[in-house]
Image (cartoon, rainbow, N blue to C red; front, side, top):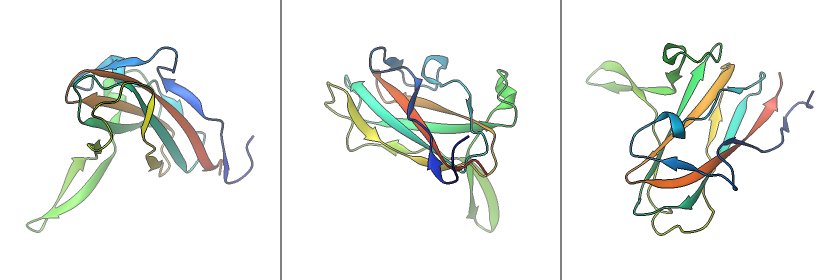
Length: 147
């Protein structure tokens, strides 16, 4: 068991340096990580690494959480935020995009290290897509717990 506020070991979760995954223009199964058991940690940090950008200039990612980590699509829901538009609250999927560091990548390059507060979520996964086909891999670490 990790000490409070410690960070777990960085581990590959989607592809690896020796075997990157293909990232397409939609959130396909090949660019979706398996379920990560958050073990009551407070935060998860992903390291998004591109190995070849091809003609891509934008990389998108989306977090999904699940109470059980099951395989069924209905088990998973995208992390969402709430906005107020014309006096009505609306939910929308949180989908960050990196536009500044993607173009021209031809060797393993760290693109972004987003941190997600888990807010009690037990299982989490990440999905990637780009504006054109490219390849890369994702690593993760957990911190702030277990509580």
